[in-house]
Length: 58
Image 1 (spheres, rainbow, N blue to C red):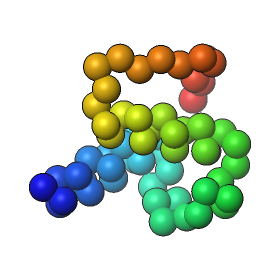
Image 2: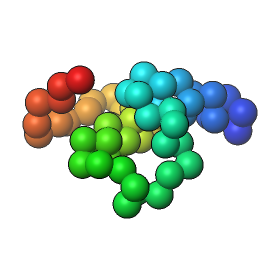
Image 3: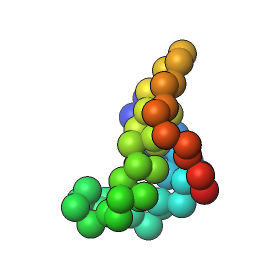
């Protein structure tokens, strides 16, 4: 289970281009990177509905 979760997290980080920052402290991320990290965190939890209040551009 843990291995599957780690693989899923790695895949989502790759999707948003943050693989190199997987072990970085949040203070090391730019504003845009922090937003992508937050979106990734939400995606890993597999919500039925994801509410966003700003346009996400990449």
